[in-house]
Image (cartoon, rainbow, N blue to C red; front, side, top):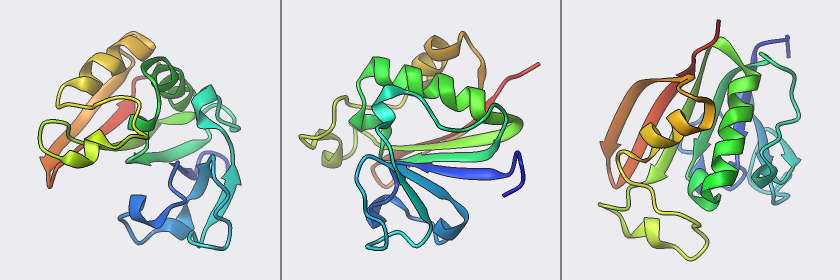
Amino acid sequence: MNCGTLKIDLGGAWPATNMEDDRKEYVCLDINDYSGEFAPGKIFQIDLSKGILPFCENSCIKIRACHFLEHLSGSEMINLLDDCHRVLRKDGEMKIQVPNADKSMDAYQPLHKQLMKENALNYLSWLSTKKKWKIINRIIENGDITWIIQPIKE
């Protein structure tokens, strides 16, 4: 891939978390190794709770985290959002989708470290990089909350 055109999927090796049909375009980072088993794209086994992405600054055009961030603690999520900000290009975007704790029992699974509600990311994005995220869109449907955010960079 050319520099700055990388698309990464955080914690998305399991097929249920990838609701889109474009998985081959993404490099998947997951703590579990599902290589060849479920995900057709490239999968790299990595512990994302450390908050460190193995990519250069401004190397990504898209990042998605579908049904993943709720598996991190608040501080782990903040560190990861900071590093997502670092690797995203100025015109890049991040899609975050989590179960809505107000609408879905999926939010209460034992492996979830936190419950996410409608306004959760507004606070976390401010806290993570001192207001360096712009919320482009927020969609609440089917028991999920989806945010599309973009880094604010000079």
